[in-house]
Amino acid sequence: MKNNYLCPMLYLVPTPVGNLEDITMRALRVLREADLILAEDTRTSGLLLKHFDIHKPMLSYHKFNEHQTVERIVERLQTGENIAVVSDAGTPAISDPGFLVAREAVRAGVEVSCLPGATAFVPALVASGLPCDRFCFEGFLPQKKGRQTRITQLADETRTMVFYESPHRVVKALQQFAEIFGEDRPAAACREISKVHEQIVRGTLAEVLAHFMENEPRGEFVIVVGGKQA
Image (cartoon, rainbow, N blue to C red):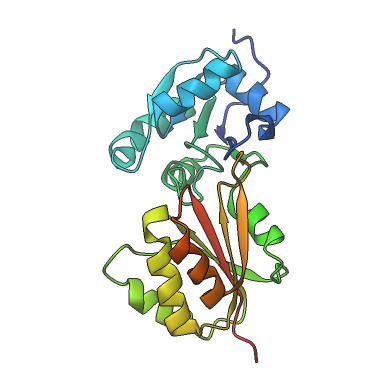
């Protein structure tokens, strides 16, 4: 007999994007009681589990192996195991692995639960000072093919737009946004959310771009851009 209180299902468990205090008590309980933890990077998640004194078997689950492993994972769920999914930071399936196993679990009749918790774009959006009652989440733009096309398609978007970007492409992204959306479009570039060096640079796209032309972008970024005004 299992010595936990979880109902057999797949749990998508958000983990901190920065400050470890952002993890919830419920997330810790699920991780402690799960039969298996699927981790995007077992080394990264191992450090988190060690910090909270959690000792559970982990299985590597990432974009390069999820198609090969998902069938076996669903089979384990169908036998009544409790399986938790974590990404390196934030909520699984939001620009991270998690969608595929959730979809296949649902198709197989397995219960799926996503715990509320950390995700980078929500605090960035709310703190940007831009309208957040209606927005569209674009995640990571294509790195090469289709990038310019996708940005052009968003030129007439009236909702606030949210993008994820790596530091070495921040300047390029801001340049493309300014060229296509217009230099005067309001924006905010948020980096290192919930970490010691958290910073939000607000202004027009031209002003935000100028800042990062003078100051090398470092850390993970969320870029929030105002929608087109009627």
